Image 1: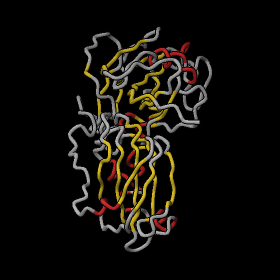
Image 2: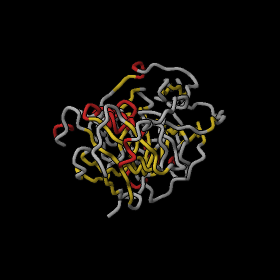
Image 3: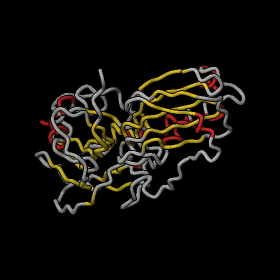
Length: 316
């Protein structure tokens, strides 16, 4: 998909477990926010502009499980799945001394990756909405051994955390299914987690760029200068083998329209967030007569693309 892709594993379509009309991951998730019934966070205050939370403690804070209060409730997308990417600013304080441990922004990362090392952080963000400011207390037991050791937390120690949840992305395309009846196009079926499987017909591929909107999202349209967050699966028409899939890697990717092959850019331009796109790219709009990694020269490419969001420009 990229003009100069990294080495890509070849995965057969048979590796996918396929079902038709699968629901969007996380759409039926139970959303229970961790609460502070003990009132321990009454001794903590948070101030500062969005993206720069300042935290002060008037007394030591110790907890044996993660507790939280939503200082501000955002109106954006809700976190309902570990597959969703999130981006946030965090301030971490020592619960025992009230001293600041760190303040940092984060890269766009799936919630599942945070849960691996910082289960308490993932719990704080689960079922929160984009734009929220979350104040919480996390025991050392809700951190990985490496994180707890690095921050000098042991035993009954706790940390106090303020999170500004700045960006939440879709786990998968959630748009309205569209009717398509163009003959000779591949079929798409979805695994329960949203992973697409692509079935190539026993016919010659289209000679021109062919694009179908499988789901129509109601989010903003992507433009020329946007950094677009997507999931995709790509395979070649001739051998029906997957040559790249963000679903298989377990993480979305960000692209700009000037950094992908022309057919991919043309198919993606103007599409709306929440949409799922099927595109067949002829060699002239793909990699042409050059062999690229596992993609043979002269290949017709097939992609299913989920448009998950548009990245927020990084601050200087």
